[in-house]
Length: 235
Image 1 (cartoon, rainbow, N blue to C red):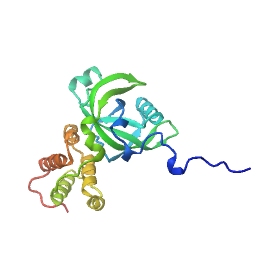
Image 2 (image 1 turned 135 degrees about the vertical axis):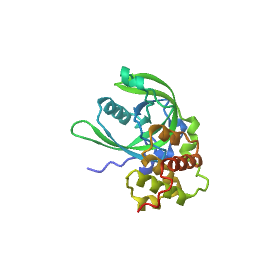
Image 3 (image 1 turned 45 degrees about the vertical axis):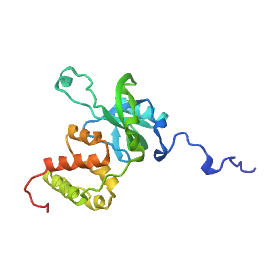
């Protein structure tokens, strides 16, 4: 019995969804399931591992896998009254569309996933919740540059890294400095804001920065404000 040959060459087989690097504004959904996480950032071109165990967010992952693999990572804006009346907290106005790049389903039905950052979006309004998770109407057009990010203007990389070392030292934290120092400037400006344990409002200021150049300025300011003023170099 002969082997049936596909009429398509391997490179001609159409993809159901485009590769991340091929996505355009036309591929951005007008509505997306929301994953609110405080103090967690995902930038375009960044990668973020997450453990997903709450039933509503397991449902969100399942629905994303069944469609475009996209979900909206966004920070909640906590207020005292939210704790008092057990209400869903309001959300910041800007989040990031993340695409599920890999996932593992565990025996207990929970997931380990890795999100790949696609573009930031503005949350226009929330719509009807779906299967327990929040859903937002979004607009990514403001951040079209995220899909083809313009490099930052030249910056003092050595000063930024030294400030980062001092900040981590003051917090009693460690990092894989040899890997960080090998990153090119663009990846450095994705990675550093994601790993710095800044408070949520300061994290949001980094996400809101209009460009990589502005992100450098905000990051350097936050590091200088938080770091010790007169401490010598970390040992």
